[in-house]
Amino acid sequence: MRVVVVGGVAGGMSAATRMRRLDESAEIVVFERGPEVSYANCGLPYYVGGTIADRSSLLLQTPASLHRRFRLDVRVRHEVVRIDTATKSLDVVDLDTGLRSTEAYDKLILAPGARPRRDEPTSTIPTLSLRTVDDADRIHRALVHAAVPVVVVGGGYTGLEAVENLVARGARVTLVQRGGQLLSPLDVEMAAPIAAAVRERGVDVRLGAQIERIEDGAVILDDGTAIPAELVIDASGVVPESQLAVDAGLRIGETGGIWVDETCRTSDPDVFAVGDGVEKQELIAGESTLVTMAGLANRHGRMVADIIAGRAETARPALGTGIVKVFDIVAAKAGWSEKQLRAAGREFYIVHVHPGSHAGYYPGAETLSMKLLADPASDRILGAQIVGRDGVDKRIDVIATAMHAGLPAAELAQLELAYAPQFGSAKDAVNFLGYVAENTRTGTTPTVQWHELDAALASGATLVDVRTASEFAAGAIPGAVNVPLDELREHIDELPGGPLVVHCQVGLRGHLATRILTQRGLAVRNLDGGYRTWRDGTAAS
Image (cartoon, rainbow, N blue to C red; front, top):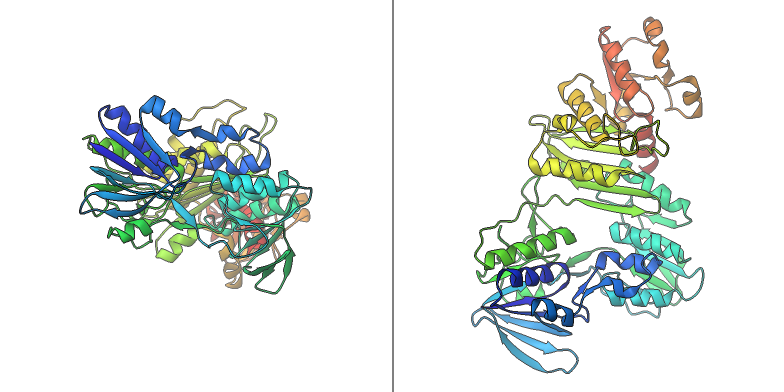
């Protein structure tokens, strides 16, 4: 059997090496258009920034090492320009010599990846993406002196990693984001701390802006502003590299990615496709989506090899779990955001909590901002977002695992997680999220969201701040009445009539106040996530 793989890196090389582990007799050929077939593209920003000092550490395998260990025939700088599914053959061009050849296959695996959303403009200012080792090399060379003015386009995962590492190299960075917030997969109140952290490092953040044109020495925004620049990093996103599949007559999905079934088989039974250029099915609604994550590419590449070798496997729906570190703050998500759920017309409830990353009495505890979205009928977890400085990764992984397993939100409270003071609390942050979710869904503690507060007050509700007098003096929501929690019982008769909204700093004391007042027969709701969530949301909106 002759298995041909088009494209290397995560998906293609996972398929090729797994195929060899399952079948010593197969002939396995890999064609890669670029000069490197296996490299750590997620590490490229950190090579630019100097965290990864040795360039060679990014190059995981070479054609020679892959041949020695796996007996793979790996041909770099070879571009597949045509697929003929009728004859099961490929037209391949050697980019160094220009020679064209025809190659047969029994099974074909496409791993074409994705390309930058925009073509590189004609300009004397280098405009680069950050997807290949060559990109990283060129950026590295461009940072020739201190305070090089650099414009980064796009405030997503890659753009933010680029910003952090350019600042580490001493560049003077402007970040241009088309939308009204950074890190658009997150909801606005969760993304606000990211923008604050970026600005604190001296980055000029331009939200709601686009590049109109690039001139010598400057980038011109759509509002006419000229920003000095010697280098532009385009991190505005990618689109599937699907033209080869289009020309071959393979089905393309509604997202523009190559359509595949649950086995990653294309519309041709002998052609499979994996990686960033391929449409996936997501978990929450079963819709088609694009997820450009190395973990999925690796997993699907391995699965395709299993299927070709005769094993029965199917791809699990994608959660889109992601995480990014920007300076000293970390943001992560899994599943859908509130804005996605609203756009889809889905019913959901929301929980915001701000627990400690580990026991508060042990030095170094940091506050986590956590948001959970769940179905009010089934209690199915629909999405989660976490922002903080410590412990974000392990909490989002626990929640992603719970989503994969189908655990309801309230069951998070029952998880038995590792505990020692330096790692967590006896009631872990994930457990705490589950307790609050149960209280919210059952109506034990009715809540109002930060973006619903103005409407609640306009309809006649009174806002009661149950924090201490000193907290209230340090910053308060306009119109709030301050009645500290520990004095609340003595002052219940002094509260105005009608509906009440109570709040504290992060929600816990507000929950206690809600329980006190509810049992006195008052109509009361707790401001979910407290003053901290309201502050972040209103600052960003």
